[in-house]
Length: 222
Image (cartoon, rainbow, N blue to C red; front, side, top):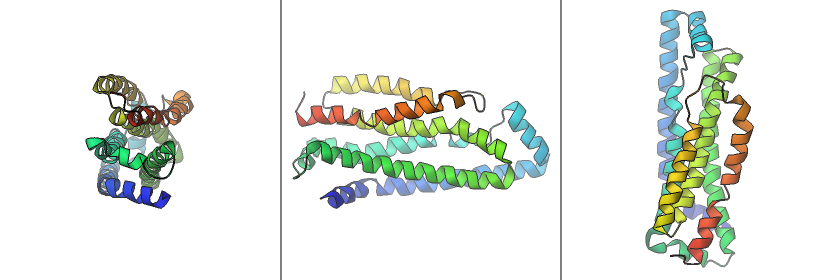
């Protein structure tokens, strides 16, 4: 039964995952081609100086990529379940209702985590060709809130889509939009380091909120 649920979820999101992977690779290729060009043009030492002391971030094209990927996977996974309340068929499987929802949600989150981790890994590998470790570390500290924001977006969009009452959907959407914006607040390079752990803990807690909407959906709240 678990394999059947996972297979069903994969069928819904596989195209989005492939598109997201393709866009991520294109973004990374664009970043490092531009870095190579600029270093050849202005010299590596000057380029590093611009990063360290002028805040010239070479990876800004990645800023909203996690948000878009998290949003797209959540919509692909949960919107079909809300059409004619199809998810109720899933809840009638011979396993616990919460168990089905948790498996669906955990699978989507795991796919998103793997995809975002792959992007970060490729980014680090490419950056290591051009930059010393201190620049790479500062870059990762700056980017991590964006990637946590992608996860938070996935969790909150799932909450909104499974909510059966349109009034509450609107309310949740406003709150979610305001909350997710915080992850993408502009700041100097490395400025978010003191709040990375709290942001990670908050994101982890958000992974559970979908159970609330799932409960309301199952009980037919209108």
